[in-house]
Image (cartoon, rainbow, N blue to C red; front, side, top):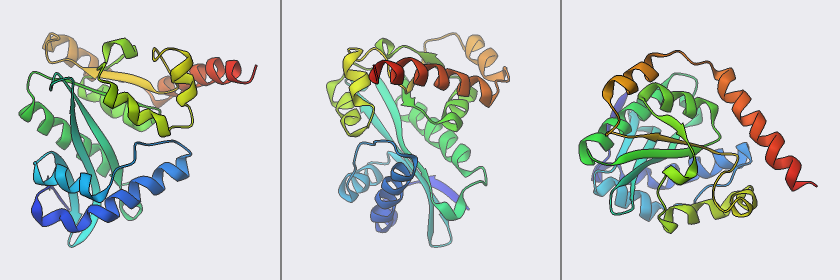
Length: 209
């Protein structure tokens, strides 16, 4: 398995990457910012993506998006092809895109919003911390990507302060000792499950009243 920075030789995988991301979102029942093959190709050509390849078969992918004049960076579109799931590949891709983000944007804060329990745990182990949405980018273009999510009304009625997604942030200005201590601390999947359960009870109950 090769996990490398994507380049021009990988543009042939752009369409299947888009299809795999869309199909995964459909199965999970979540919204996702739609991306075209042209957009994915641009990320590859700019050296802002990581791809996993097994022989000549696409296995996984993730790309970088910069926001707020490159003060914030998001690692987006993390996907593993169904044929390669449950092998720990997502964690390896996540680490590779994180390292690439730190190299290309060393001063930027790296962030993400997700309901995925596995992604939350991976982020935490990399040194991210859960944060309120007010600590994330205020770039309106980023938040437009939430419009296709079925829970967008929650984000709207809370004035973009919170949603079912959890915001997570890696701040390079934070003392390294604090990040290391946090990433070394073992945290169970059940912790994130409880967090999501609380949010669902709070927001979905209000939605139905």
